[in-house]
Image (cartoon, rainbow over all chains, first blue to last red; front, side, top):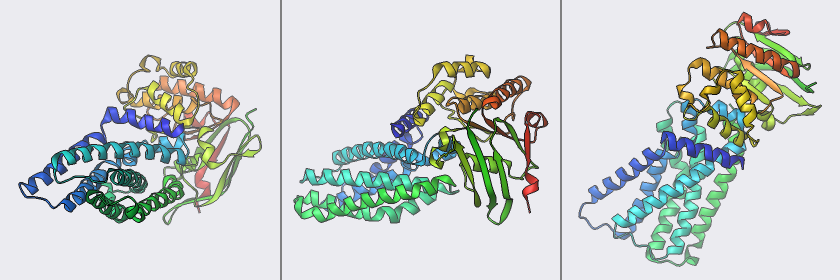
Length: 219
Length: 210
């Protein structure tokens, strides 16, 4: 329940300060508009639309998900958090906030994307939903631990995408591949290896994050 | 009797190559008010943070014991009350909202009676529903005492407790420090003479620099 209490605090704080939501919403609108304008009346190959979806998701995540820890550091409230909760409570609470934010953000992006790009047709819904679910978990876990690492640094804005890129690259590559499969109508069984890679990525990121967070958080 | 025992064994702290203090040993066993003093940069705040478990010493260790059982560093937060000028509360919440959220995150029940009584003691009761960002710096400092006392901690760590306070604020703080010092260990890090006058024992930090 303690992580949920921290999530509720962050949720109420977000409603008052609009620290992450505004920048995320603006970024999603701007990114989709830029893609639409740059394409114009050109016909986009179907497999490219799947890739573009993950480009929008990756950069939107870069603009909003670091806020979980960076906002505490910017406001100077990190010390307060250290005084009221265990590191594991803090990580779980922040992860819960990022998970919900990632899912909401990516649902909005995907709905807008499918409305705006008529070439984006999913033929295997189950495969796409599994990819979407597992990739969002990986994205939230990786973003949370990277945010904790960079929150203590001076140049947070530039460090976050730089550090995220190599860590999120395997996740993005597999997600692009699986999205392409689900657009082609590949069966779930044929994509099982790639799905298992996503499951492994999530487990590894989650385990590494729990092992690392105590060290990152203390000094 | 509080049954709390705080011991520091051979504590050394360095930031990079800069030595702050070395081989610091002390034991605080009896209830009372203890002072940590020293010139600017001698490491008073650093020592308070090490005692609170917020930062680690470069070598040595701090042991917190309650009823002869060592308190694990991950559970230290619910045993400590901490006040410092660099402690910042959530400014977008009111006093009541701040402490309600904090109690839930700590996993303890929010005690409305204690909250109202502390807000009254620190002359803030009529401002309990106002956002913290509308408080003056002295009011924010007094509110930090309420934050530090709301979970009835076993030890109080006060770093420059009277900074930003006017005479009335100082009086209310001193009254509470004296009251708390009767049934728990209170540690004050300060250079203010009036703060240190409250202390039964003082630790001079410049004595621990090589």
